[in-house]
Structures are given as C-alpha cells and as structure tokens.
Image (cartoon, rainbow, N blue to C red):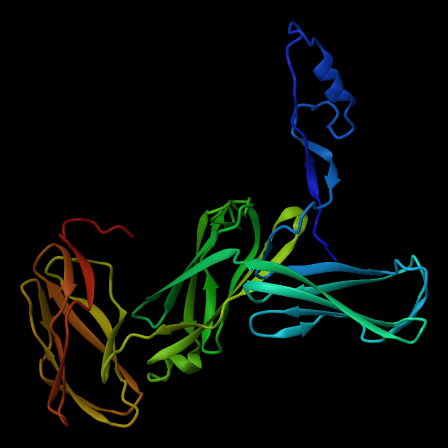
Length: 397
C-alpha cells in the first residue's frame, strides 16, 4: 500500500566558494553539471525536478486521502478467486473504499492486482486502513490474510466566530481562521452559506477605481500560524423581518465553507456545522430608531422616527407615550398621549421632535412606554447619539 500525494520540488544545498580558495572553480562547476539545478541560477535551492514522497506525510481534515493498493503473486503457482477488500476504520464508523466487490478469476505468478482508492477525510483522530485478501490455491484451499495501516488525521484550521447584533436586526459575523499546519495555504474560497431566514453580504472587499479588490491583497496566502479575519453582514429576509417574534431566541445563522490549496494545488475543503447565535432579548415591547440626523444645530428642533414593536405573540397592548426631558435633550410635543392598540407581532412608526440645549455629542434619552392593561412601564434611555453644533457653524454636507 502506498499513499498517493502530490510530488514536491527537489531541493539541493548549494556548496560554493570563491575562485581564490583552494578548490578553485571545482564546486561551481559541479553545480553547473548537476542536472537538478536551474541553469543560470545554480545557487538557487529549488531545482527543476520533482521528487516522489518518501514517507506517508501528514493528512489533514478536509483533504482527499488517496492510496495505491497492489496485490502481487510472489509464488510460482496460479491462484484463483482473488478478492481484495479495503476498509477505512475511524473512531465512529467503518467505510468500504473498494472500487469493485467482484473477485478476480485468477492471478498468475509475478502478476499483480492494482487498485486506487479515494476518500474525503471528514473526521480527525486515528484512522486504520484495513486491507483484506482472500484467494483459493491450486489444491482448493481457501486462504485469507489482512494488513493494517494506521495514520492520524490532523486539524488544519482553527476557526473562531464572534457575533455582533445591530439594532436594525442585522447580524455581523466575524470569522477568525488560523492556519495551524506547517506549510502555507492558498485560500481559494471562504464564504458563508446563510440559513433560509437571512441574506448575506461579504465585507471582505473594497471598491478601488470601480473594481472590487480583496482586503487581503492579490496574494491570498495564509502562512503557518497566521490568522485572518473575515466579516459578513446578515440581514433578515423581508418576510421574516416583518414578524417580530421570528428572530427572537436562538436562531441558525448558516455555515462557513472554506476551500484551500497546498502543495502543487492539493485541495482541501471544510464546512463548519450550523452556526447559532443567541438573539438579544427585547422584552414585550421593542423601540428602535428608523431615522435620526447625524449632526444638528444647537437649540433648533430636529425630527426622529421611532419604530415600536409588540414582541408578544399573544397579547394586544394599549400604549401611552411619555417624554421626559434631560439636562441636554428637550422633547417637543405632548407627553402622555395615547398611541392606541398595538396587536401581537405588529409595529407602528412614530415621528418625534426634540432639540438640544448643550453642544457636543448628546445621548437621546427619556422615552417611556406604559402598557395600560398591565400597568407596566418600559424605559428607553441612550437610544442613540447625535452631534450638536452651534448654529453659527456651517454643517458639512
């Protein structure tokens, strides 16, 4: 049994000296005569030849394990009904890798039966390749033997994820991917396959002169022990965003699909399990801002638009809005007004006017919603921040 892997570039150790040294030009001439060196660049360690693997090497999760199996008849007799079976034993299952289950009628002396098996490795840990051969001798005796080949499957990447929840129901996913192998990787693809509730936008490119360019540059190599951060924005689809209770609680975000290449284009692929995040709890009533200006003038009214959502799936609410002034923010309008009935999982938009009496970055606070049925009050402070400048300062467009 021999593992089939990509060959490697032949390397040599250049030995040279100056012409005034004792060997003279001997070493330089030997390097020029060496067929493995690059003509004109004999001192370069990499040659033009390829070498076959000298040992089993490392195999990583997500790669394809390929092996060449050869059964050779070393005797001087013809054997019949030869059946070769190759199984791969993992910690959780046993897989049959044989391309054919039919027996070979006969095998003459000094002849062989060859087979190539392939398997995409999906588990880490100890794997045992079990090769079993059964045959019948000329005397009719049935013979059987097995050979075992043990190897370890290692983890190639370390993947860590972080979730950031936005007020607009958007979810930002940061995926940190670290190369924990001993050789560089070419990252062919790192994508997020969202669940049915979300649309995804990759935030790993920038627009330059009308063209999309990767934030990692044109060379997407990941060196050993290097880490790279990928960012994605997930937004609920319209049919789910309109239902307040759908994204409440634990929701499935999707899964990462990672494809890389190593030595001479050897390919590997990993898919994470379904990523889950805990959606923020909004209680029975949720208040979010739809529109607010970034910069406003001192002591001049400005408008904001709020969205009030009944997160309950069963109870209708009768809400009353109260507006409490702070040291810097003053609300314009009638406090204590009735907003009317708000049915389960429904929303209403509310336009409010306020002004600031203090310059600088001010926090919008002081909204109170009271459910008249339960006599319960919900307080909303630090809803947003707005930059207040003097009216004499011309605002930048």
